Length: 263
Ligand code: MN
Image (cartoon, rainbow, N blue to C red; front, side, top):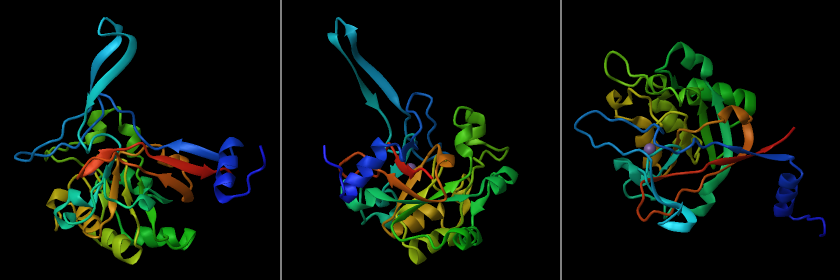
């Protein structure tokens, strides 16, 4: 085989020589996979369930397979603009441009702030601090908010962090930061480690769940329940995010992978 000199060949050579590492940013899907829990009277999504069909038995002696049931917003998943009232005339998972499934990741680390205050929301000042260090967040990139919350995925008490007020106390993003990223930086969307891209208490914000409101209004996306964000550099990793092609789907469980160039 000849040495490839095309751009795609360079990528393949990088993968084969392990100069490019592939990082899995998706959580495992099983019956324990956490899902968003909304208060009454709102409808809630079901979790992930596997329904065995056959396992080399009388129902299929030569084959193992299952059906599964899952919410569109179950586990590591993608939020499409039509998920929100402000984006209802925009794209669903089946109509989004394919180009938008691939983009750079900018990882903003707020683990320290979140460890001191679980309700902490990424601010415009946090974004500016990131940009002073790493340069401007490029158009067509994902902004991943690194909170460390993925560490709690197996401990539902910590992961949901329901307070005495009955509300989930989990981190998010300020309305001002969402507007800044959607309008001033033209990003693809925001990714988080929690069940949704807004803070747990953001139902009481104005508007409610402002990141959903402003991102989806601008035809941008969300990624929830990511893991292994700590394996990404602050900038330069390439994210591949391809939701299922559900007709008019508002979202989809997604296997998010990142290509990371080794230094
Ligand atoms: Mn969602």
